[in-house]
View (cartoon, rainbow, N blue to C red):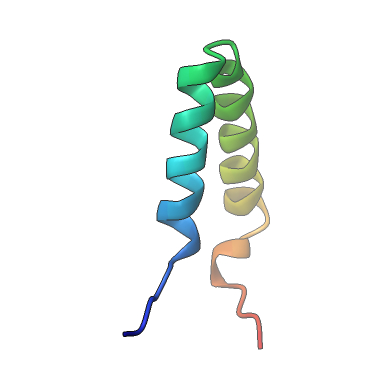
Length: 51
């Protein structure tokens, strides 16, 4: 049996559990998400390929 995990769903699951445990954490998660998305958009990091 093979187990394949993607980083996106795993991060979402952990973030969801932490938000349920500490609701104020939601503000920080949203702020960090918006900053990262903004930086990716400004510097065109969406096309970055890691080899």
